[in-house]
Length: 256
Image (cartoon, rainbow, N blue to C red; front, top):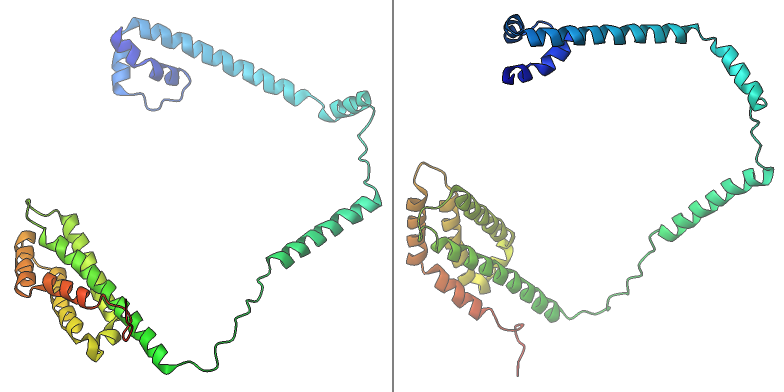
């Protein structure tokens, strides 16, 4: 009985002539099992009966005179329905309202010109230079802060065990960002007042290039060498000192 239940669906497909070829396991089972042969015979008889009924139904459908059926139905319904034409004023008013609404939407959504107030006719050159220098210092300070975070995270690597590949990929991505930001600040770092920051940025570049370099060297071996490079150059300390030195106000301002 347990084996018979496995072939129940196949018996239905075989009775409906939808199983070709017949699986070898099913054929062997039918040769041994009288019960399944009886079920198959019953289902074949049922399938033949359904097919016969379906054929008769289609024959009856084909005999129907559908035009006469349509005419009789319309006569009982009182003829074809007549579509009432809309009044002329509605046919004109609705499109007009649509055009007016679309015009209002375009007018309301149309961007308005922003009136920019005129700049002062005389701008002190010294004031412009001080503002530009302040902006340059802000950009360099942000770069140093980002470098401090990346290097601090790098110094903690391999302390608690092996580094996962995704961790190393993340550190290399941070190194690429630092190199790109340093390239963006190339003009600001070339100023004479930024000489200490430029020297530190060159050491940071060496660390980033070493971290991004490929090879078959184990990750912790490479990171250990880079950590010794950071320590020997005192990079974290020098970055912190630069941050303190650049943390003042605009040049020439006096704070209380």
